[in-house]
Amino acid sequence: MSISALVNANAVETLDGQVFPDRSPLRFHRRLPGYEETPLVGAPGLADAMGVGKVLVKDESGRLGLPAFKILGASWATYRALQERLPEGAFGDWETVEDLRERLEPLLPLDLVTATDGNHGRALARVARLLGLGARIFVPEDMAAARREAIAGEGAEVVVVDGTYDEAVERSAAEEGESGLVVSDMSWPGYERIPSWVIEGYSTMLWEIDDELERRGEAGPELVVVQIGVGAFAAAVIRHFRSQQTSRHPKVLGVEPANAACVLRSVAEDRIVSVPGPLDSIMVGLNCGRPSLVAWPSVSRGADVLVAVDDEPAREAMRLMAASGIVSGETGAAGLGGLLELLRGGSSRRQQEEARRALGVNRESRVLLFNSEGATDPDNYRRLVGGAHSSS
Image (cartoon, rainbow, N blue to C red; front, side, top):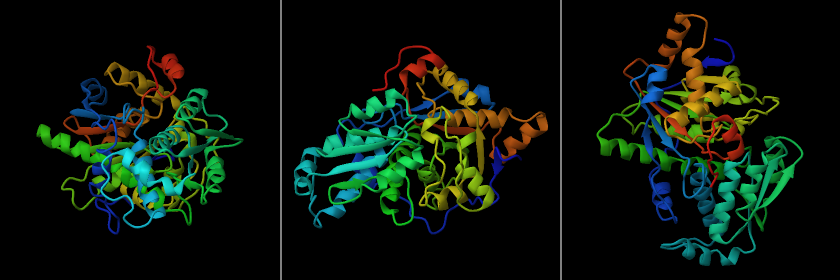
């Protein structure tokens, strides 16, 4: 295959030496105001389009009052990091967010700091507001105005960096100190614990999927499709489905933008590499030039197939999601776009059959997709799909 699609020869069915999160993040999130399980939606129209038995979509377009799942990682990582700044046992047996705010008073003034392409930064700003903390969010200069405004609307200071997401990460890293706590979903040498907690936080949605399938008496998926930016979300998904505690180990397909395929290229070279970009895909949450250090061991050995796609498959996937009643932004629809491109790609039936064999799918297969965000840029969503959809 070309560099735009790669079967990972190093993929394994179970991951050894990895820490698999328990349900502690789920128990934490259940205590946050507004917690509800997000829907696991059947999408027969998508199943027909792909020639598979059933498609399930974990719809994260409304998570704890935000249009994306990122608050799961941001809140859990912040909670764990604040625990370390306080005397042992200071949080005690808290019941409400108000209890936490009282216990944090000795740390004030304190800002939560991160870099973002949009969703993680807004999520962290929301966490800061809940806890009575400040927030300083670094963003790349090409971020859409709607996403900047949404972050500022949470009460955060938005700092626009003259450069890319990766350069915003470098700027934010310098803010760590007594009055600044960096809570990033990206990791680098010497900064690994907090991004690991971000990954743990995402496990909540995966436990929810397991619990919902058990309630329905349904089997799990044979194929799981996940979007890849720096790899934190993908690492959470892979760790869950590659855990030795799990009886079924589905194939995993990772999807990236063609000009930001840092994980695909790193897997191809068997080492972490950076891609130069330009990082300007409409799938803005995936416009990352280098994999996360803590996510790399999981994504490099847990993803069976990787595919990098241009923007048009994401646009088509947004419209297909809408036809199934799911509001999906550019990044949220990227997984579907990558899978469709792979299944329909190639110039011959033989190539398409090879893709299906690599993914392990047939007309009876069950496929799990993640709608990782709703219409976070409402104007662009209306241009691409039509209809009036809010980002809140």
